[in-house]
Length: 282
Ligand SMILES: O=C(O)CCC(=O)C(=O)O
Ligand SMILES: [Fe+2]
Image (cartoon, rainbow, N blue to C red; front, side, top):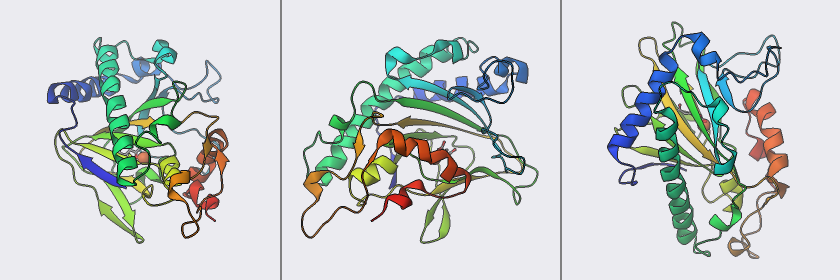
């Protein structure tokens, strides 16, 4: 599920600052942004996980998303690679660090609330995350697009991690969610966060809360910005439904898989517009 959260504990001023430093980053000339490039030095074809750029290009006929992004690791805290973090605007680093400390608290609060709703041990999901689990901030920038009929801002996908905390531009919509084969617009509201229960959580809760298929459409006139913070489990975690949710009448609906093997299969399925998680269904 996707849900909107208000009264989430992040002050309006911090959210405004986060949006404004993000805008300032993307507004810079390309040469400046390239200083944080996601291409491995020089050769122009090898991509790394962190940095600024576009999709990984793997074939000539690949249809790219109409967006740029800046992808930065925020968890584990000790592994933040500040060399990839923008140095302009100057406050970018502090604002993101503060923002990420807040979203982490929201992550744990949501995971505990979900466990409570499911009537299992309140800490079950939180305990699946050790201090080695990763968190990434992904800033998406969608420029105005002259042909919205031809290209998407972001192709259909479900988020591969445990939980995503999404902060959207409130000036312009674009995010859509699929339900029963139809696409619906997700409303925007100032200072509201969108919480997305992602693939790994769908497996762990045995499909009670689904990880929604979503996409972003482009807009002729307006540009758009969003910031997703993706939280994952450790690479070595076995993804499987919580034992407390299973019994004779409620068998497991997913095959088990190590989190790192799941992550390894995600990109190829994303490129093909498919959900990898569907291949695990029993
Ligand atoms: O820009 C958005 O609203 C959605 C972004 C998104 O789905 C993602 O980064 O995974
Ligand atoms: Fe997403």
